[in-house]
Length: 584
Image (cartoon, rainbow, N blue to C red; front, side):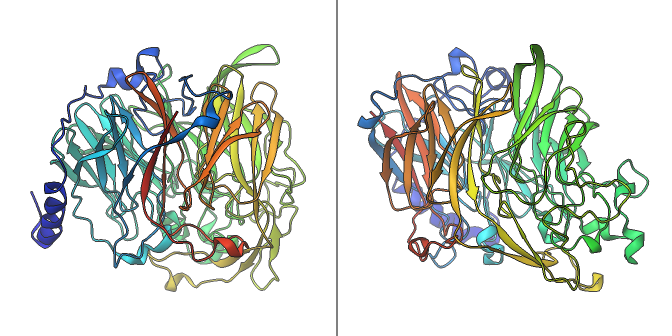
């Protein structure tokens, strides 16, 4: 049903769909059993969840496209998407991972609007339906607006919206099945793709930087009703609350606006029934004097019981962070040998420029190695604890090697760039070679402190406590790590910062770039084997799927894009929101 205030919008969508040729939308349901078997041979041609498999490895086993024939790759078809509203100038960026199920593609635009596309012909993408979310397209979200994808469960297509609602649409018709307002506080909302685990839908509150408190919630997949919620910032008296020294500031409620958002989709270990989720920076991001202490559970990997939300363990990468090095990025779950011993590993490319491996059964530290070329914020990682060597548990305010960002100070230059390293864009792991791949930013930032009085802070307005700007021209790189040893095996420099993340297929690594280039790289050497420039900035990750036994590669492009990073040719980019599909 359409809300009264959205009647005109609904009529516009209906007019759009009336012009779309009728197509069959039949496909098998995405049952929990299918999702659990997403990595099986039977599902090799599908991409059923945002990271393809629960381990978040983003590896497709399809082998039609190889290093020998990838040079013959061509555009098979493209599908225009909406999301340029209001006024047609575009908001945010297209960061969504497409899903592929039995020849049908699913994707969201920057506003979280879901699209179902019939790609069964392999030569054309026909829009089956466009879901009407009824969202108020408020431009105040600005360029930080994003939707990173959707989820499938049985016959439902599920989206989480920036206004704090989670909605389920009928896979066959596109009709709304349920619509729940989950985030209710001012400024709260979602940008991540939901994660389906059995009969639950998991979402993370994404807008921590808007002076809100982060959390992860589990919803009943049939109704959307909330089952449990874990707050990433503990309230006074709970374990971890002793790391928020708000009483030292005269503002005992500083934890209430403390951030630690969970804005990128987590991963899941079925054997232990554990979900793993990364958390964002403490808020305000550049003023630690506003919220002294280590600020748990910000900048952390969290392990939660999937049924109850109870915390099993945590690992905090940068305690008392004041450099905006939140650690929301992908939590890779990998079974490998470390020093000859079988280990269940969580591997993570930290936004702080360091590649970490942890024991995912208990969160204990295994190894850490720099992956960016220039890293100055710490002199190293303690091999026993995994903490920066400068970390002092007796201090309420940490001072790392690049200096302290203090009130009344001159600021500091910190490397890597405040956006990483690797930020929200996904990484990948090829289990056949044991190599994890990432792509990110090479550069530094100038950070300054600008204190704000507590009386002037309210949820819903971005709360930085300072400012940051790129220090010089920023570049990019692609790299691979041997997870068993923690050693970097390969790295190549790229001219532009990477915002898209990577896909791994046998022998190849795929990524898009800000200048509109989409390329395939030899997995052993990272030599570029094929590329095309479509003119649209890429800030979304690619996927691979098959139709009638033929392999395809898909990636979404468009949106206003990110900053120019010091490259004049990236300024004033034209844009159109598109889904591109390639094949031999």
